[in-house]
Image (tube, rainbow, N blue to C red):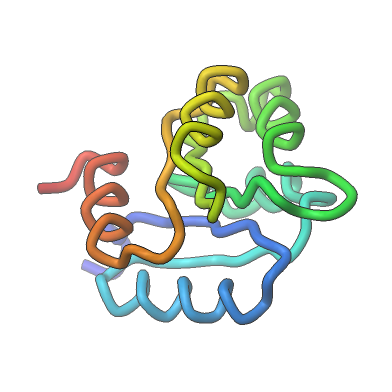
Amino acid sequence: MEDQKKTILVIDDDENLLTATRDLLENWGYRVYTHKRGFGSTVAIDLVKPDLVLLDINMPGLPGDRLAGLIKSFEATKNVPVVFYSSNDEDTLRKAVSDSKVTGYIPKGDLYELRQKVKQYLGRS
């Protein structure tokens, strides 16, 4: 059943958060890849072919909201579900989702919500 695992790519500039999120998601049964910066993310998405991308908004150089636009503009990555995974307040996240036309958002810090929303966005019960 290993080949039926859903694949998640987490893009964030915080290495500690990447490690913690990867460990949690792997413990919950997902295959997880991480990418530490906005630059090069579209290549990583094309290589990994994730079922879901968790994307931080607040990254230096190429913020997640701008990166989401790039992801959606390339043929190879435009259909990949992108979810903002951010510590921004929920009003800001809702606006960013609307402006960027991504799938949704998950606030950082609430592990129950992370687990539930990842399942929801991946269509798992």
